Image (cartoon, rainbow over all chains, first blue to last red; front, side, top):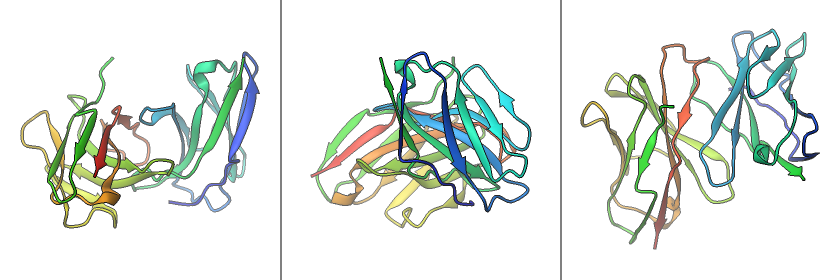
Length: 108
Length: 116
């Protein structure tokens, strides 16, 4: 899988929007952009995925740059429960490969 | 909501002992996975399993590891002779569909293995 780059950590205030960036300049045309998160002491959890167009679901939105070399996961209103490590993963025809992700802290 | 369940939640074993970690994937899922996470480190892929055979494995998954789907519901990971460095959280995951690059993986809560 192609490499992604994410900030090690970010901080947000509760009930404010959070934009988690991910750079993937070597993405190939068939790679999907996946986001998973891992809450403390839990297994990873699927958040969202997309290919070219922006995507929305009940958990988050995914904004994908026109050249697909970067993307942003948007949590519209952060809650304390959203404190987790967020992983941006490019996925071709291989299993998910996790990087170090971004550790999001949410301040009450 | 259907979920992946894993047992035991925590196992302590002596070095050199055999360990079997058990997983019950979501019932209609076709693809099964084991990952592990050493404390403070990344989640690492071990093996994927489809149609009763291993479809892909990582370098970590050496001859000491094996997987099996002994019946229609369980998916097991066996470590034949545990080493200290096998101490980790082991996550089972399953996926429904055939599309390898889009399907959502559902993870269990993990089994913590401590090797003394």
